[in-house]
Image (cartoon, rainbow, N blue to C red; front, side, top):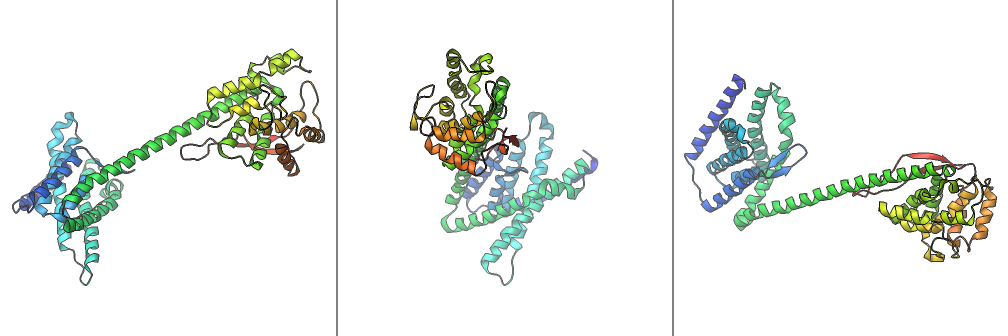
Length: 458
């Protein structure tokens, strides 16, 4: 520390001691129990480092008790309370290895507090607006007392920091201390309200109310912090689900190259029909995920069966039929936050009960699976496969119309044809969709999605 800095600190200490001696020479307490209560609360707040946390720093709670004491008690009482509180606060933050600097720092902190209290008391006793009513004068006194106390406490510390760091005073004060001004003024206004309550109902209830209110506020802050932590965890979990879906989708494409772009097109078609049928929220998200991952169970099917350039034998088809069950088991282990497993298991069921693996029929089949059955069949018929060439758009539509009521749910077929008439489903078109287009809600309800892309229809 430079000689100038040490000289400045000693000057503040001398001025502070002089003010303290002057006030303590006329010290008296009209209500020792009330004063002792203030001192105890201020000491507890100082020792426990209790305060209001902001993005810039912490406003100590003992500030409120100093301001309340300024309004309710004599300057001498406030001076002693402030000094004791400053010493307690400063020492509670020190480490054992800093013991050599404790006394000097603590005396400087106490002296700065004493000077600020003297300025605040002077402002409080001397502020009066001639011709104004009592309410206006009270408000003016509260604002000016808080601002004056702030200047009295921040200026000595700003000067100290400027001497130590070599930085200009105005920069130190603006960057490190100025943000506290509104809180000091607000604390002074609260102290004024406290003083009014004290004069009307006595000091006991307001004094007891301060720690109770703080405990409620602190509990609320802890609760909000837990909510925020939960939201962050949910967002991280949602991002993990997205990455899992991406990885599984890539695994499907690697296993079955003949379905390239099929997954994305089916997803878009299914979502459009789902919206027409009133699906939303988790139900629609389940449809999105299942549409993208419906072939994940094919990872358990031998590759020569998947890529066979011809019709499957009955034995081969029996092996192929296990993929909805395997896919459902895989998704069950992933535990996505929406009901996609029933759709995955039932996406090869038929309206008349002749599908697999469980032979479900009609409304026993999940709605998402019934929607998927239609759009998957359409896209499969209009795409080239190893064992056949693609059928035309009109031929596929005729087949779906013919199978309505047997293979497909008629209620789903109707919005499918409505989407065709709107141009959302058809040949030689570009489908705008999300990849993988999943809304994975975080704790605040906001959606997490991947980038949008264009997927060709053929």
